[in-house]
Length: 362
View 1 (cartoon, rainbow, N blue to C red):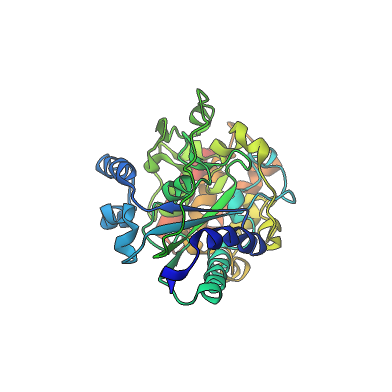
View 2 (cartoon, helix red, strand yellow):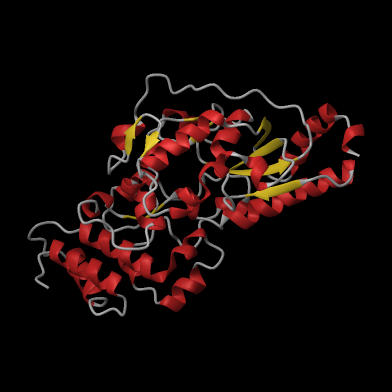
């Protein structure tokens, strides 16, 4: 049936359907990514993916959508904004060593299922309109170079911090893809508008942006607090500050984010469990059962309780100051002492380090 479909008309209808489903933007791209494939291979060869072995396992396939879904001709990319104007000020939270900083994308509901359902409904609309066709939906669920496809679909450009940036919306958004065998008219790829700006590079607490458009994940706080399963390198722990899940520093300083759009979906706009204002001590006190219960439906849940405690222990160590006998320091030490004999060797290791930062011999 696809041969008889007016693809230009269908492309125009996609805009309306996408807006109705909560997407802030939609675009269509060809799926050939030869230059991005070479960039990926160089990144992998440099070892910048760290322990994310799945990145190297898929290798070139990640840049070849037609190998994921045979017959693929186009990628339909969508954007969903997540910035919450209901959350406490990010900069103020980072400046308060007693509080926990959680990446803005994880303050609300887990976006994976939410976006996937919306993309499936988009595909359903298309089936109703033209009949069955070949497609596959992705929301961080497969080896896809989503930022490259979104750039080619006109949704934005890849900035020097390696995040996608849209002129009209900054970078506080999620991406999703629908790979399809429909020969839809492709949109014009976005041009870069970073210019000479390098604000994101010195803003990175750990120096993970090693050159423009090059991120060494092994130094990235998002990698260290989310992807890394084992011990956080000691040399990097003091640089993490109070960031217990992810990091937004490169986005917070990006001048394009003055155009950031507030999340339209209420489950992305609303903060859950007061994670924008919670103290390190109260979150460190969560039992494994509380962690599972409170973070049900949250992206944070996937790191597990052990890594959660590991991350907070580091942050509690970072709130120490020499000869600090304040009530806050005393409370932090007491909290760390409560986990000094935790069942997890990983937690115990980071707790001991944090106690030493407070001048406690262990």
